[in-house]
Image 1 (tube, one colour):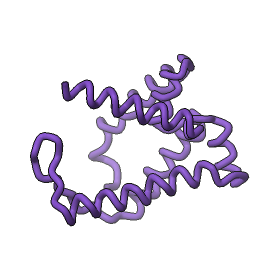
Image 2 (tube, rainbow, N blue to C red):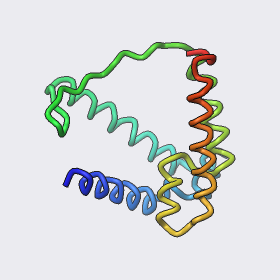
Image 3 (cartoon, rainbow, N blue to C red):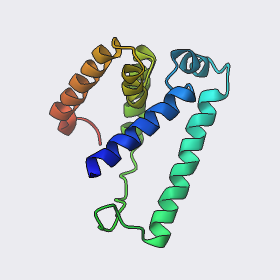
Image 4 (tube, rainbow, N blue to C red):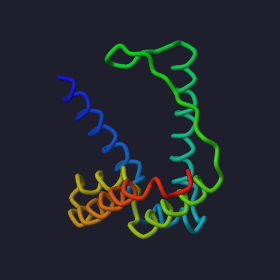
Length: 137
């Protein structure tokens, strides 16, 4: 039953991303050229909603689906960590034309060539796991 909930949430997210054109390569291209506000509006809305939801969880002590307390671990503030990671993520996003969420959305929408991108994203994640202890964190 719980798995069905996750599948439904994933389907809802995928449909929302596809209908809002967040998975559109052309919208992403417009964003990188600073020609349209569309993607910045979607990203900004997600950030604002994330801040509001985290504050609600913290202040009202909302528990997880399994009944456990939700704890937020403080992040290690390090400029190289976010700068290098952000550049690598942005380059991958620019090369592939989609970040991880839209990759799966596009496969579900009938663009099977994105399976290649997902495969290499998984390989990249695996390589990161192998060398992460040698990177600045």
